[in-house]
Image (cartoon, rainbow, N blue to C red; front, top):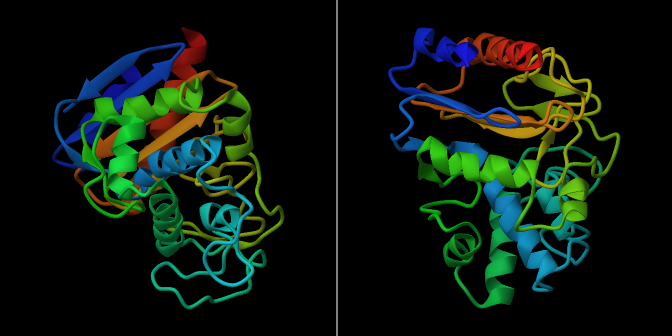
Amino acid sequence: MEALRQVDAWPSTHAAVAVTGRIEAVHGDVGRNFAWASVTKLATAVAVLVAVEEGIVDLDEPAGPTGSTLRHLLAHASGLPLEGTAPLAPPGTRRIYSNSGFELAAALVAERAELAFPLYFQHVWGFPLNGSPAAGVEAPLGTLLDVARELLDPRRLPQATLAEAASVQFAGLAGVLPGFGRMTPNDWGLGIELRDAKAPHWTGTANSPRTFGHFGRAGGFLWVDPEAGLALACLSDLGFGDWAKDAWPRLADAVLAEAWLG
């Protein structure tokens, strides 16, 4: 796919990009290990949902601050800040992006499974979590493609569970989409950011409103567009910034245009 060659002009030193689904193509430093940063949350969310399916935890059981549930933690609706355990708002009233919420969700799974969360994560995925469940994976593009394919056509989760994860949780909540500003509403699923009608956004203008995924401050992202039947995964060694706000949507639009023409 010619569109993937756009990454060669990016200001990063190393980058790898791939499309998967009804079209398969890769380009760049595909064997290189990259930090995923918050893209890790997609894999962690799936691992937590596997624990739900196994009956280890329940989405609507108490977890985190008083009045919060595991569902609140995964949906960034618990009121917890980015870091720390002192709530900034009551659960279910604001969308506050929180690494701490993911760490508490993982801790609950670990406690119930009687297994350290990195071991549970590796049991689910077959690759290691070397740091925080919010941001700890460092792995090559091919590993991220495993996550992309799970989100396109799940094998670890029932289709209905994935559909719930990719649907709005606690509708109508306003909040800040990191790097892009305040959104009303700022819709999220279960560990999955939902494109909806958000603008500006890190996906393309041609992406359908059903597109979902996550990006990370380390310079990578993964989106899945169910209407296009495609996922686009990218990792780089240049941290998220203004360059990405231009380059990522342009890449997405070029990929979708080439895919539809093809």
